[in-house]
Length: 114
Length: 111
Image 1: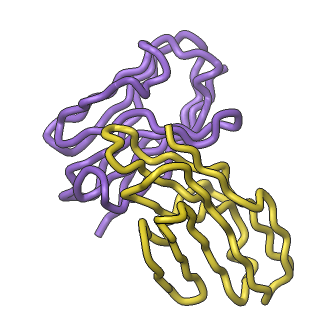
Image 2: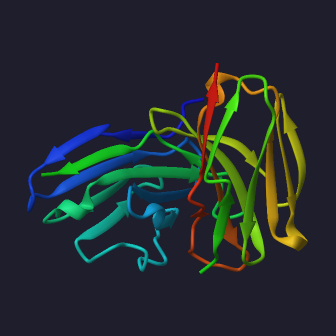
């Protein structure tokens, strides 16, 4: 079946603009995760959803970041008032259930903030 | 949080050689995965292996959970094996920690 898909694949924006990143998980997967990969920080976990609920948002880098998931499927990660340090690859993953399950990653969205 | 250390950080081998990549972690885990990140940045699942041994073609992996390490073996390396190999773990009882990644091993296979 289809894997995890993300859009857009690339995004260039100006400092101060808002951006929205989208993730479509594998059909039937109830858990969805967002990660960020940057040169300085490596791969870091941001947030996860079990169904539509995100129990812990403490991994988000700042209050400019927010995420939601609707219908237990598609998720969006929104970054408000982007800064240059937000430039990174944003990766989405999904698994059948939360924890103790294989996480499958999407191709990522490459975000460049000028 | 849990610490993940991978070694070696860089490895250059000739085609046909065998290699062993190591992942040490600092706490009990209920999830351990090995990934290969290809030149386009895609993370490709290799193994889900919180304990035990698995094999898939030229690749195999072993996790000794009691001693908190995992090994990835690549035999008869091919140039297409080049890329970065990541180990990622989830701490047992960690709640909403997600996967913690090591810094990776950058593998270059020369023809």
